[in-house]
Structures are given as C-alpha cells and as structure tokens.
Length: 472
View 1 (cartoon, rainbow, N blue to C red):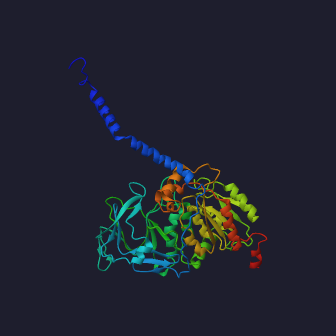
View 2: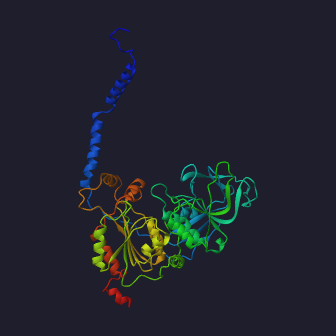
View 3: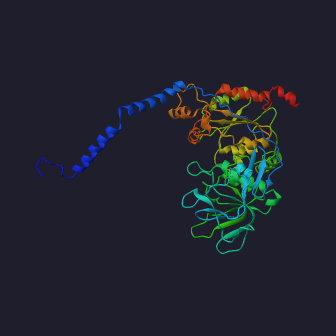
C-alpha cells in the first residue's frame, strides 16, 4: 500500500458506505417529491380558511324509538329483549376457560341470526389479567374434556372443573387499564344486566362469575362495587382468577356471556328502572321523588381533572342562572364512595353534564328531570339515551363547537375534518379517539335554542312559567 493510498486503513470502509448511502439518498429524493410534500402541507394549512370556523351541527338520522318491553325472554341460545332496538346476550351450552384460549365446546347448535345481530356476534377473543393486564385470549371451537356433544351435559372428570346449571360469566372486555383507571360505564354493561337477570325465575340459583379482582382499585371502580353492595341480596358474585398455566380448565355447562358492548340498552321498561333507582336511593338515604315544578336544583357537572370538560363553564353557568332564575350548583365527579357519586345528580331537576363514564349515575336521576349531555367537537355516541328512556327523563344532546375567539382550530383537528368530514369522524376510530379527548366549547346561541325548546315543552318549568298553570 503506497503512502497516499488510504483504502486499506481502518474506518475507510465505513466512509465509503456513508458516501454510497448519500449518493443513493440524492438519487431517491427528487425535487418533484419535495414539491409534492410542500403542496400537501400547504393545502392542509390553507384548509383552515376553506373550512368554516364554526363547524356545522351534525345532522343525524331519526333515532330508534323506544317502547315498553315486557322484559327479557330466555331462549335456548340467548336472552333477548326489544326496547330501543333488539338486544341479546349469547347463551352458550358448554364453554371452557383455559390459560391460552377460551373453548366453545363441540356440539354447539347454530346461533339464530337475530341473536348474533343483536349481540354483536359471539366474541372472537376475551380479556383476562394474566402475563399482562387485559391480555387477549382467542375464542375457538374444540372438544372439551368430559363434555357430551350429543346430550350437552358434562360428566365428572379430573381434567376440568365443571360448573353446573345456568350461570352468568363476565371477563374484562371493554374495561380500560392504565392511567385512565376503571370505567363504571363498561362495568355497568356487565353488572346491571346480571342484577336484572337475577330477578328472573330462571336465574334464581344463578351466580355472576367474574374474572376480576375486587381488591385491585384499577380494575373495578368504587361505583360498581357500591352498586353490587346495594343488590348483594339479589345477585351473588363469585370473583374468579384466570386459569394459570398447567391448571385444568374452568368450564360451564350453561352460561350467559357478558363480553360484548351493549350501548347501555339493558333496561327493558319503567318498572325495572324504578326498581333499580328506588333500591339505590333507599340505600343512599335519598328521598324518592319526581323533579320539582318549578325547578329548584340545577346541577352542572364539571370534570376538572379531565381533558373533556366544559371550557366555557363560567359563561354557561351565568347564562343558565340568568335564564332560569335559579342558582346553579357545580358537581365534580371522581372516585368517591358510591352514594357520594350518586348524590351528585340524584337530587337535581336539571343536569348539564359532559359525556363520560360518570354519567352512569344518571340511572338515579329523578323522573321528570331534564338532562343535557355535552359532546366535544368530532365526537358523538348515543349510549346513555338507551337506558334513560325508562327513567322518564327529558334528554337533550348538545354538540360542542370551536370558539370564534380562537384564531384557528388545532392543526390535527383540521386534518381530521379535511379527510373525514365533520360527521364521518364520529365513526372513524382515530378521529373519535382524538375528539373525545378534547375540551368542550358550547355555542351559547345554539344552546339557548335547545333550552328554550325544553322550556316551551314544559320539560323545564322555571319560576313564573306558564307551565306551572298547566300542571296546577
């Protein structure tokens, strides 16, 4: 190697590779590509001037009408009702919980289409706390130990633990984990149907087997534990641990599964709702009564520790007090004891509340009360109105906007509205997840029209209202 030849020196090969990558990068990134990227970002940024500052209010289809149902009908493959649309919980004859899978035993008869449609279908996976929290376990069809596929009856065996009779079984599906903490709404989707079913003749000897730990404060909320305590004489709950590696499976001969999402459509009629509400109020020492006429108690729920709170809270509060001539109380939800949470809204005649899991307390609202549920821009779900139908309350949905005093909307919000449009964001997962984390701004002019509508219909009877004479 000559003194001027450095090709063989240490590190020279690294330098050659670096220069080679640089040449390839130059060949790859063409000016037209840079121009295209620039134009995309320019178009997105300019869209804040193309799209209106005030987003249009969503125009939804006519909501499903609700009616008084007789109750639930226990069928061979499910338990169903039809109140605000069909709702079913699947019934499985033969199911075994292993460590790595959930097995639907062989010999299963086909599920009727109406059960599949009204339950969202059988779960393809279930969730348990095992190697990691809320671990997904697939649901499969297989042979179960000791199971007779022709008679649908299990025989005693040392390779499985069989639970006899009709039982209710729940996992941790839709129950969140992490900093968000437990979610009373998704817990109620499992617990409240089980409480109601416990009153049916066919369920008198049934228990709720729940793969959950009541001691873990991040798994089950104080609200749900309090509710179960109210109905402890009616519903027996057995908390079970997930099956460990090498352990024999836990099997059920006949089981109703609480693993799907029900959108809170689980109360069939006013009689059932009154039974639930009155038991809760009696337990919490709250008088059972209808809403006052004229109104006396107006409550605004303020989620101070959440991103989804009412940003112009003070303006809305002042507006309500002026319009209704009644002081407005502020209620702050949180992980308080059960009755303290219930009392936040149970004694109110008018409730203004952001959407959230705390609204499961609306089960205890007085008949005749008026509820305004507030939604942030780009987010909407119609969960709570499905069980408020039986509570005999007046329910209004109020949609947030973006305030004019803000010079422009957040860049990410503009991107979503550009690609999805205002309404499609409600069904696009990424857009919904973004929207539900945003603060809520109410357009007072629009809210005023909704308030006046409720007053004109005598849903809200303020002082000196003409509705007072009608009631008298």
